[in-house]
Length: 457
Image 1: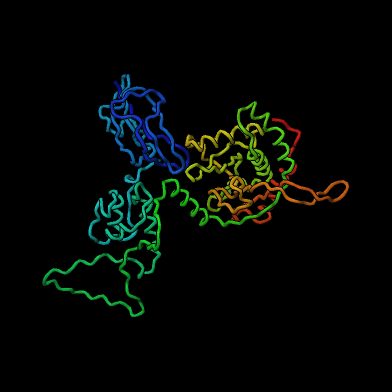
Image 2: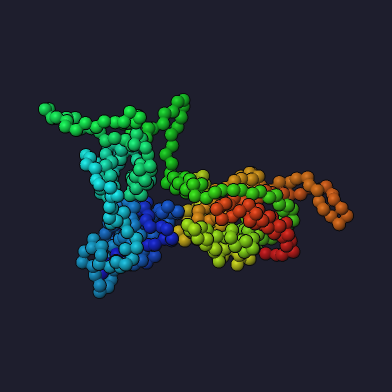
């Protein structure tokens, strides 16, 4: 028998860790090749991890709820073979050091304080009702953060744990505070007969130091219900705030006449559903127009990296999808400009269905270069969506409404009933100016109004 170490797989760009939600197999259980062994959650999607080997599980070094870095051992499986690992817990025997070096764990990264350490009473591993890792405690000790101050830091880890990123972000904001805003460490009482030999004189202009905790829980009055945010809601909130603080958001609006599209869809939808066994919605038609417009305006199909503009050669459109839980996920249609209307319809239906059933793969929600969100599906006529970083634009399509409008005909202007909708284009003003942002959304509207009603699916 040979003991094979299965590592936490790489699940896409920018994903460096995952949380073990549920073990589907236990120690001693047989497992087949590609059989799911665990359910994991990243900051983008939940998914299953298939077994890379066939054999018997002999070691599960992590518990449910643990955060495992990409490249770390997820489990050890005993298989038939000549090579064996003498110790299932021997992490380094089969791990490529070069690969592990590129995905360091929080505990493996040395921390060097920027200033001399301040002696404070040591913080407890389980202080404040939550666990603190050795690295977090080391940083707190080095930076003079006491137990009370550490307990007040908001944590983004599992069950509110404070991660290395949380404490470093706190230190960054802490250093920007005025001296009177920095919480003092509790003063230890003097022992009997102990004499103070140093007197500290505060300037008269400096106000008294506030010794209250860094954050005070809000008070509520009346009949309220407090509900804990789920993991996905927390991540969405974090990403949205990050986007607003990163990009200069501007929104332009255009109204498009989609009467011809509505008539064409009504004509073909019955035959399409009987032939394909699925519906055709307006979404693939919108995506086709957007993908063509992105080809015409490459600076909208772009992203920013500091002072560098990245122009994407591929048109990968994210499709914002509402989940039954009320949360939001954005699966990506890769190479949307190369797909026919039938291909886009198939891709839209497939990704939307699997998104609602939590069956998306991590690679299917990354790599987007532009995003479309259909606010009209909820009866909204327009919106001001938030940009999906690091993209520089997002289009909201509103509800289609019947309106009385003036129609230009060869015989002159006439009054008629038309189907119209608003397109709301939010763009990053750091790269996209008003002229480019307005021209792009106008181009999308022109493509919709010039839709070829003679085509078939």
